[in-house]
Image (cartoon, rainbow, N blue to C red; front, side):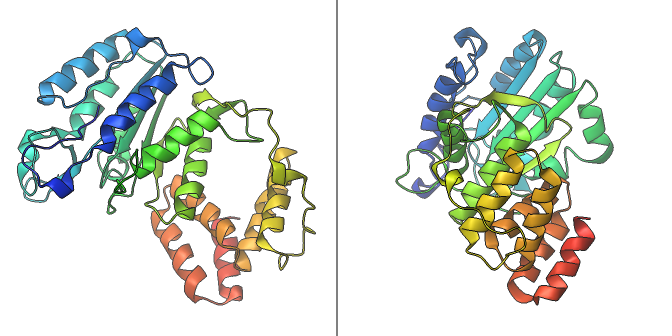
Length: 329
């Protein structure tokens, strides 16, 4: 589902890239090398007229899907403090800002259809501003537990609850979906043959953080649910053959330290990789700090993630090391 044109918003609020998002995502999911989703099982709603059109399509999919149900939205995310202090609205073509949420689809309506779906696994991908609200409010606490009572529900969002998403001017796709499409199409070299939600999240986080773009969020009980095949499985990363750093030489160039960490992970030495990443982060390796912050956010420790990033920029190595040991013991 996506909205690229809003009839009651100014020209600078239009999102032409969303239409490209929808077409490319549907095409990739249909490719056998990625998912092989049959065309008749993929419903694309571009510019849906009203909430009822979306609810009917989602109700039908929820009744028919037996294994996996995927809901994707790209467009404007809206909030309305006068009506709902924590709610997220998915803007439809006639919605507007401010106050036009009565012409949008409340995310609770999507959640309600997921709750009664017959599918064993359910995935939600939201590419809109404030999309993290789907994790922190409407999918929180007891409500979230109720929404995941079949087996696995995964929610992947383009931004935090208090952050905007990004549709860069002149780019073919929105920032978040563009990164997702790239991962699906090109795969992850030296990655697993099947990509689960957590793997996708971490790769998206690294790519988007590296370009200074809004950071994605992941929540739910289905982090290990497979999302797609890895099209680059079995391909060797050219940099992986470079000399690796001494495990204790955290002052070596950052690329060598990261090569060493990747080498440990590829050979199943996950605890060693974790400790190496902690040491590298303690001595200021920015990518290691971003990865650790991403893990904190995945665990729902958003405040600690922000504290880590703040301390990394302002605090001495000793204090940062103590923080890291406390939250990643």
